[in-house]
Image (cartoon, rainbow over all chains, first blue to last red; front, side, top):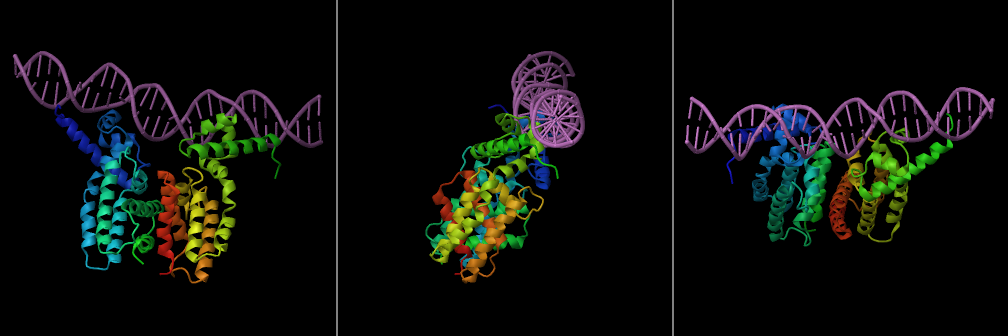
Length: 187
Length: 187
DNA sequence: CACGATACGGAGGGTGTCTCCGTTTAGCAA
DNA sequence: TTGCTAAACGGAGACACCCTCCGTATCGTG
């Protein structure tokens, strides 16, 4: 295992930073690899040396915020409110995560259950967080028997994708999430 | 208003037929306009004379089945069962419609509320059908007060998109739809 | 049958992802 | 410091996609 050259490390980080900004402002489709390269002041060859595909670059660009998802789940669950409030708090946090980068919600939710996707690692993290939520609330007897974490990922991810795509208001998102919450909570 | 030439009509129909088959088998992205043209035995210019964009061709290709959606809504509502059964029957029919062509569910659900989309007409039809379902069940006092048809289109469309994309089983679809149904039915 | 309006075909323009390879440079060793 | 080699760089260009343009062929009417 040979060390990475210093200039390579610098470039990799600058590229990921630039890409993060661009993707965040414009969304996945509206940013071309040429644009990322030009903005970062490197050739496209350099881009592809560091990130084998555009999706891999995207994955790296949106990496940082994924790592706080578990903390967010804990925070939502730790509240004192009724199960419904805590579940909704988690749902809203989850949607907020997924919609932080335009186009990410659908891409990630699409990749759920696909081990070959560049987003597979992120999906596992999300699935895990949802699993903890399910376990906690089920332990309190607050959920219907047949709720599982993957299903929740898909339901809430689907809502997030629609909210992101149609640029719906937070209120509209909340009322859709309330439907899902009421559907999984014990009657 | 001059008449259409006979060969033009023939070509238009053959193109739409071929496109329907191809899109249905492979999904929107995996079919190129060149492929449609070659398979139909025409030049791409002819394609674009009849359909101004790929999305317009897609819209035409999936047209036929849309026209039966109102009948499907009536049929689902006409049943004798409890509101929950009838609502679920409608949801399943709706998802079955949207997933009949790979990739259509997300495209159409994305276009909800966008009057400029090539799918705007389809969206209105779908919205209408959902509105009738909402009106009927609300008339029976079976729904929560704040349910509206657009929200339902988005929720069920989101589920359809995920089901289509991840090629989920009918059972998996049903259990997700049950969550949505329980979330909108009066407690 | 002749002729004008209509339709056809496919080369090619513009843009996107990704590859290939000649050139440059970092970093170590003498 | 200097020389050398493996690593990294840059950007031309291959390939695929959607779509346009215009010269050619065809329909259908007078």
